[in-house]
Length: 330
Image 1 (spheres, rainbow, N blue to C red):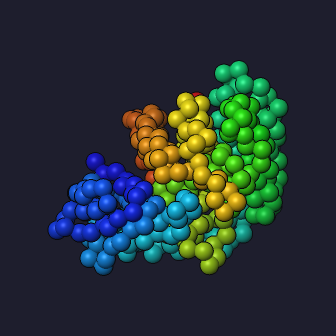
Image 2: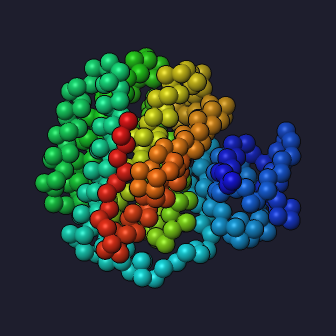
């Protein structure tokens, strides 16, 4: 079974026939290339053209992050599932204002429904979240009346700000107070975790897009422009609450991350390497967690669920079935 390879320390990654060899100051490690789905690089890494040729042959993406966990870019191998017809449909749905608005609205609806799912989950466990739940339900109603992408983005942003107010109620931990959303730099520990988790999800979404016929450069909620990729940002909105946020809440509630797992730098707070490793371990466990998929009649992992979401989008673009975003049913 293929799995992501997370490289948190510096070293050299090279090719040894059909095996990946990672050399660090501490040790030397061999990883069969057939067991790797994608690579996430956080430390300083040396590599050469022979390695990239091997990764390209096996369709392995390399996601690169800065020392502080900011997404920097992706080595995206030559696409092997290209479909001229589907790319034309993607572009047509973007260029048609009504079709683009319809798809963007579906992504936002999926995001708000899953924000609500998190709030309801903790409300059932005695957290005082009735007001936040009511506000999010109001945003769902308000969403339908919006007539532009800009208006949709505003509704989505306000819904998420409302939702963020639930985090302090849920955690009740003075070391992990949310207060307000800050990104570059994240001003507190909870914001640092959100930014790091979101960056991981963007990479995971891009890896799944690579396995489909979709072009990652054509998004709908996020404008297609000179940025390299946008479709993964759209899909990430649906999954942030149930993948990123639930991972963070579990780590903090179980005290698997503490105050001393963070460093202060450049006016913000960031995970230290050991804390990052614990986050990545919890993240991978979450991505491999399975749930029953009624349409397929079997259990699938959350990682697979992202790809299934993309297949639904393909059917929408081809006019076979309207896209309905995944909705958590805890």
